[in-house]
Length: 81
Picture 1 (cartoon, helix red, strand yellow):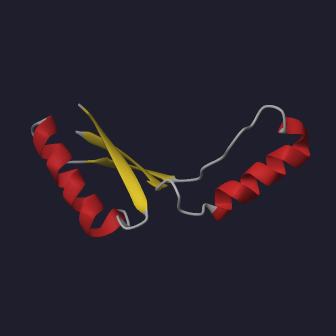
Picture 2 (cartoon, one colour; picture 1 turned 90 degrees about the vertical axis):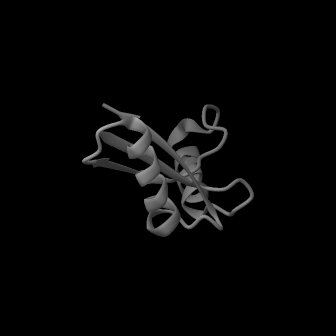
């Protein structure tokens, strides 16, 4: 099973990387196109699980314990066979 985990700052948390990227895109001629930028991270891992429910449960534990700072970050998990 493959787990795809997307982690991003929660709404309301200052995203300095997103702001810097947005500013640079503005100066590169994309001011009229780009309304906002949020920068996050994606983690892709292969899991030794026999079913999607178990894989999602294990990936959730990993996020809660290590991968995401749940005080300031949200995460989303997609499981692929």
